[in-house]
Length: 392
Image (cartoon, rainbow, N blue to C red):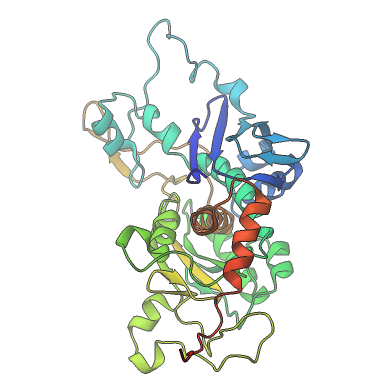
């Protein structure tokens, strides 16, 4: 069994995006229609740019699946960029005859300046095309494959918008996921959702953008994924890195996060309840302030991870900046952009959580085929009840 790993390729206005996912066992049911569902969800949300109406993303499976079942081989997927026809000359692969128009108006908050310096580019388009959040469509496609694998073990992953700007949702207990998916901002609190829509409209009129917080929840995750024995095997660290890797994310918290840090220890930890009272699992907690993770391992409770998304860097009323060639003051470059992507970020967050959990499941339970992995999983589940002392 190889380690689950993902590679993506492609530029924002290039011909296509490509995702290659290696390590999914053989025998997992998978179709292009299933993947399309998550790609559609990524494109929704009040505040998205017109590009989301221009392109209806769909991933074509090129390899690794036959007759609706994975083969254990690398799964390659292709997502066509529908705007490619308008960008063929700008993004052509072959040598360009004449002098190409270079993008030198640097944008604050983007990778333009740092990337141009790092790779010795005199054209910021060489950076921004790959640094674009368009790349996350490939991640969502791969995340859908991982989600499908996790479903075989009763693991479900959802997300919702916790806040946009200063509008905070009031969600007590488990969100109504049907209501979340019907909300234009993917918010479980209808009143807060209306205020979020108004805040986005106000920002758009002002030529500004908004950020916020999105939350992922994973249920049905078994005890013991991850490990306490080494820093890079701690699952909370892996989840934090995965969510932080999403474009424009500037903060990640798990469970109570920063709120728990502000209070006393008596209000920070989750009391372990006596066992034997629940048919579905042997251990439960009175609360879930730890967000389902203790010591770098899952503890059987719902995994709760949040990402803080900064406001989009591309403004329709650009900020002051400088020219890459002359360093003279100019207005930053502007291309069609979103006003708010917090609702979509939750879907991308689901994909990243699914990728990490699928990798951890395979790391623990292995198996080159789904039946083998399930046998290993079932055998482990029989061992995680209370440890009774035995006399010898």
